[in-house]
Amino acid sequence: MVETLKRGWWLLVLRGVCAVLFGVLTLARPGIALVTLVLFFGAYALVNGIFTIGMAMRSPSGNPGKGTLIFLGLLGIAAGIVTFAYPGITALTLLWVIAFWAILTGFFEILAAVRLRKELKNEWVLILSGALSVLFGLLVLARPGAGALSIVWLIGAYAILFGLMLLALAMRIKGLASQARAATRLA
Image 1 (cartoon, rainbow, N blue to C red):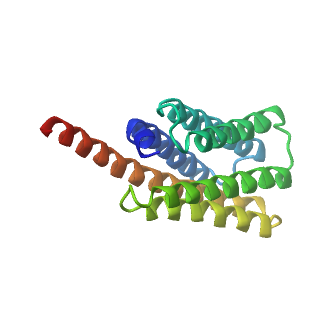
Image 2: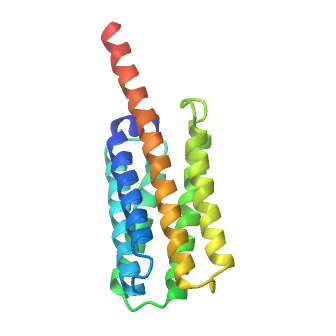
């Protein structure tokens, strides 16, 4: 799994940048129509899923965690496709899609961090990112009637925090990849 992350650290950067951009756009335009929010979420989930599958494809054959990455990527792509296929989706249904996507993504990120704890220093960033995703999903499920504007702000804040954590993780993994290349050259 670490090798996969080392090879695809830049995909984590792209995922993080997309998340931050999505969050900033959402916070900058809190009064946007629900259909626009649906399309923003659909685009984000679709792009995130594609980048996650790209990361899995760069993984060496038989590498542990490849199946998890493929599952997460397919989950993101499915969430994006469902969102685009039904743009007239109700706010409650969208909230459920977002909530379950965040919970499942967070759960698998925590599992990945536990697997990587012996190989990756500061795996707490991935654990925190996963926990944030799970917490966000649970909050959305617990308070679905909180109002669209509140949910927009919550979604925007979550996306920015999640994106920043992905960027921090990507930089840490890039450092590991650089260290490994340097060690290979010295050997």
